[in-house]
Image 1 (spheres, one colour):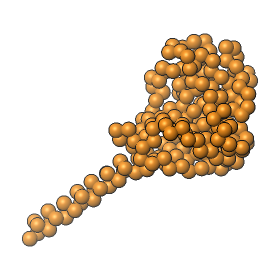
Image 2 (image 1 turned 45 degrees about the vertical axis):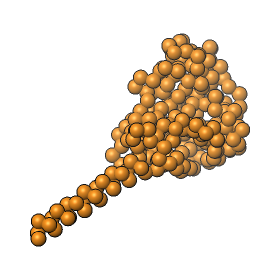
Image 3 (image 1 turned 135 degrees about the horizontal axis):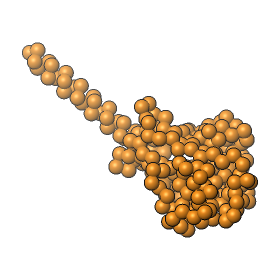
Image 4 (image 1 turned 180 degrees about the vertical axis):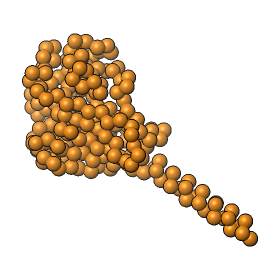
Length: 213
């Protein structure tokens, strides 16, 4: 009788452990977008669908988003000012550095910061789930006017950034992309510049995307 009780208790325990593990794998990913800049910004998000959602974030404000169990081609970026207009988001995207995500792909997430198109605001991605030590890439360029030298050029509004002129069109470093790589070695500076710059966590991890970390 005692053995039967022990076996039943063990079976119940294993069942709970299995369901807990499944729950971790199937849990939605939540991303907290945080504005630590001294100014109001508009934060934008999209994915493979192409639909853009935007938020006006005052200094110190945040926006929690739930991207579900799978988020493919997820991108978050921002621009100065509080218009939070999807049209402005679309215009600013090629003028901005991007926080890029793919979550729930074979129980793995991947994420990176991309300066391939441009840079406009300091940015960091950090896993926030307990026990996550998957890497927290960041990129901060303090004086954009001094930084943005030929062949790179300053962008107009709404992005107000610096175009990486060679970044989208080269698979090898150039003097122009090297400016971005020197300033932000943890960020991707041209199309194939991914070695050591794409980070991964187990699916179910939550994240912060911080502007002006």
